[in-house]
Image (cartoon, rainbow over all chains, first blue to last red; front, side, top):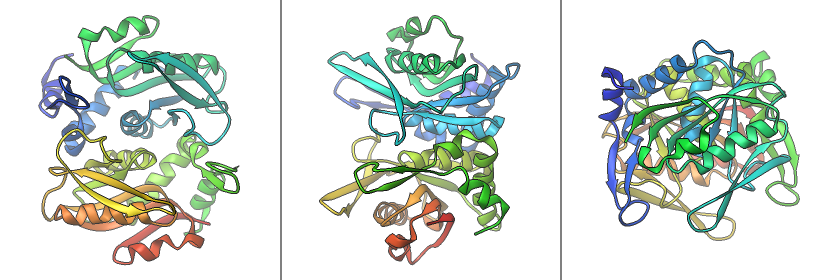
Length: 176
Length: 176
């Protein structure tokens, strides 16, 4: 996407060098959140991306995905379902592990968070290598729900994360 | 507060025994989030609580405070500012430590997140002993901003957390 609205978003992304470790140029979304106009514009673009779809819920990934996911869910009038790191959700959960550069991580969803056939979109602030998003989509499918799409404010295209999500429609507001 | 709307919210809070550890009865808000009607009702009640105030931002505490804080900010058309655990915010931060039952914890805010004189509300899902909320309010004041109020979906009144926030107006949607 590229137009006046995405230019507005891009102007509110800050580059932070050497975070979280040396050599990484971090894309900081907090200036976007601090601007009511930019934040609402991001939600507008997500809402428009799935305007023709019937949706039952927005699934957001801890923790910046909560920010966009919950605001979008409230905006379009559907429920919000959190996907969290292991041990954070209080009731019975399903877990999917995924590979990191060094080691493994995992995400969880409540067993009763979604109903069979629920049509959902997955939201996170950023897609890098795509491991977390792919695991979250697997959780959605294991609960019998249908991932209609996955949305990210930022896509780091050089990390090719979308190749791990080849079976779902992807909406990235900004691509680097 | 107690009326039809808070009854609706209360019906969407689930008690989970022995989480995060044995003997604790955890108040789970995920059923409330999963219900579009209950989630929007919670946002309605927060929006009404400060309807007469000029606000510049909503400050939300990681990570369930992000869910309500960001959705409220988008709803009332102001910026959203995250308060996070140490090391999570990428740019220059200010930090406030606070005492836990055993040990210490801390929260951080970006130095440029708020301007002097900004009028803000602090949001989190729950107030227990009040340590985190008091530290977040201290961060807001150190940045020169004015905490107009603090809002919580759930107040555990028997832990007397509001005594730590005696200098700010508190809105709790549900009290236990």
